[in-house]
Image (tube, rainbow, N blue to C red; front, side):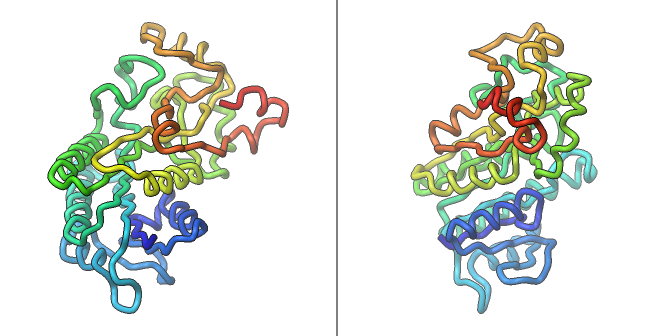
Length: 292
């Protein structure tokens, strides 16, 4: 496929661009920031004309694309003011999706967020492990934009039966170099309770993007995308009893299995996370004790 990746210079985006290229696809990084290099086009997604023009094609580079991965955004709460976050993320996403529709692109994957599940869980989730089945519970302006972007995708796919938009609710994206901080989390279960002790290795995030692009479906679908395990060595039962003692349990918690359920992504997309922080930091015998 010829694939446009918005935000391809970002933490996850740069890995997605490399991963898709290694899989044999022609990939173009459309971003407001980045280095001048083959495949990079500087685009301001708050400008609709510029966005549409880039998706239609760029002279001497490409003439349209077959698929779109939309990752461009202010990527978390607190980086910019609430109004700036809302204005940028909502306007950019509408421009990108509307331009894709005008350009005839029907295979679209977008970055949603684990935050729509109710992070930072100051109000406990309705049950643990959490999944995609309960209504979104945004608790920040950033999370609100992600929820509204999902609602936008629902309506756009309702209007056009040919359109496929897959929203991937990514957990906290990590590089291998980030794993050195993980052992310190064990000292206090509340340090990482805000996302049920979850994370996603950027390489597995990229795998999920490719699986979503390859999925032969139409309409709108949402999937939680997380690693197969938690950031903790302490067992899940102990963590939940300490922090979410009154929260109903739904199914087996496992020992260190992710509490951000990836069952749907496994079943529908064939998502199969391959990377764990345990592989690089824990002794081999300890890392093999629990392989979710």
